[in-house]
Length: 420
Ligand SMILES: [Zn+2]
Image (cartoon, rainbow, N blue to C red; front, side, top):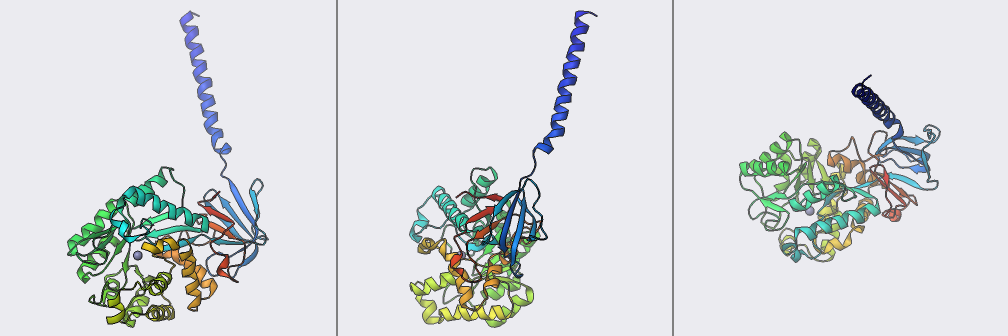
């Protein structure tokens, strides 16, 4: 054997050994990387479906998903699972806020002067406050495009670790319409401009669309048609914007085919019938109206000429309930009301109670209904096998008192227990 042949045989052997070790390493790899399993053991499960609470329950979380949830007698904790003792506590899905503007400055005047960078930090600050309180997903219904994109991308890249964000990007209105001139709003006139505005938002990465009055039926229809063609969810600000805006704005939005209406403002009762018939959802935002009336911030023209009162919103709420319109929890605390976060969310839940919604149905509104409004009912909103693991563990029974809300002992987002 020549030196060269010896060398090539040796080289061949090395390559063989190396490739074998690479092969066996890649074979062993999946076994080594076992998906972590966590078991929340012994708590009372309020699963968000509206079903009766399950005492002494086990919730098994594998990776970022719920593997099983039910009575301890039925759900076995596998060997090697990390057991978390939650006896005496209450396990619920994470809550969902369906109406928020996270970028909004605490002083409305600053909306004109503050930078997108500061708006982004403020939005993240609000999201982190919510994470601590058990609100694990939000629908942002109008904030600047750049701010929302930065947060979405920052989450994708792992720069920030926060709650789930479902943004609309900017809201669409007409020239002179509701919010025209504010950050977070874009104007469009005529059906083709409305279509283009929806296309632009989809191109910018948004899966939700928000429209604001005053729009024509043609404009609203164009936006709805475009949104549905692109597989997006579309919601409308309900009611007009001043004493001169026609009250039929919500009717137009519903006729155009929106998925959801924000706020229960002045509208004819038969529009509620139409919403019920078409399965349109609603986010009433009662708590912020309480604050608006309490702080006398409702425009005088609406109060004097259109006779707006708190009772008007509350009557519409009751009429919507009678018609079984699906409602979610939303806050909408812009301007000075930004200071009311995160408590504004739980105030909204308490106003549901005050207006006769049972505690369990209110919890369903905050969880399952929120997920339906987001278009995420298959993945979020309830503690059931196969769903993403967004959970909270409360120290007391929320069916006895809502005072225990907002102070969870454990918050889990995407299968990970948060440390903050
Ligand atoms: Zn709003």
